[in-house]
Image (cartoon, rainbow, N blue to C red; front, side):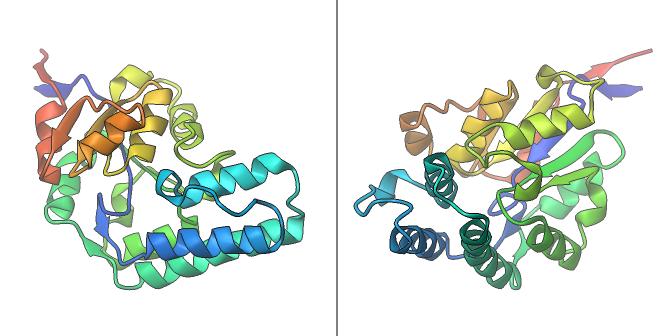
Length: 222
């Protein structure tokens, strides 16, 4: 029979499994403007080197966020996510890939989105049932590029090691978080120059999601 040396795959969601219309630039600006307005962060941060998650991490590190401000900050992000996910569609080949892998490997999602928005979009596109685990930001101490979400996956499957997992995503934050957890990262239609500049060096690069199959290292067992 055929078995796999890889036991699980962690997928990013946005622009990896689903093509959403989340306006990430607008979300980043709105969160940053909110934090500046409340004097949590200073004006003048270099927006081209930040994502929404890294801006939020900067804010959390200040120790200035009250519970009310923290909640309001997350609500801004969640509003953008829910709106963008309403029209999310599957990436070409995603459903076919998941059908092939289902029941053979552990399948997980790690997303910086609110889990409510993530599950709603996955259910709408009829792929939620393929996943053993869906990690949204509520289950992380820190968002990607921190490895917290990936570490949660490894804790959930204690019989596996990081070397027995692969991670697939489109952004440098996915790669940084994955690599920091010891999980090899496959870049899906990613900006490799941008990734390299952020210290991320993918194990592989693919242009079609189904190419993941070629990196599962099948082996023959008796």
